[in-house]
Length: 214
Ligand code: OMP
Image (cartoon, rainbow, N blue to C red; front, side, top):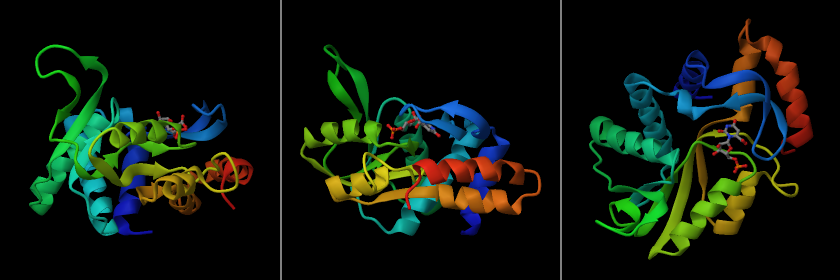
């Protein structure tokens, strides 16, 4: 685990973004942990979050032309990443987002910001079963664009429909990489080393045995 990944996990726990308990997921699975990116809810938190996304993106070396934040949660994430790339790395990248409802007046349409064209880096929060990201792919397919990859905060490393992880299925089905700031493996590593948080480890490990990838 790299230093920035450890720092990110600490930051997510401190902000209450990464929590332990009992949570029902979109997929219906009952998870002993949950990552709520909506709780990076202050200027400083969002600014730091953008820096973590930018760092993971640059570390990946994946090339792209435009950043895309899918509505709703991807929008501030893409904006924060674009700002961090500009301010920390002097990379002025175009970015855009979609609306859920098409607008008939003014500029019209569902896309806002830079044109969605070329190689698109999709920015989102979490992939569990991969449902949300498949919807995003339909938007990109409808444009003169190809997906360059997906950048997320947490890879929960859960099985999709079969034996592969949902992320591996997304990578295979759309031939693109999924980049994450951290994955469940690193969260487990972090828990194992923390005297106070260690108590959550058995439940998370049991969950991984049930739904995780082998
Ligand atoms: P999938 O569509 O199953 O991949 O689930 C991804 C979505 O689930 C995310 O965009 C979130 O809305 C939500 N989610 C979280 O935000 N954090 C989690 O830890 C788990 C989920 C989830 O419901 O699976």
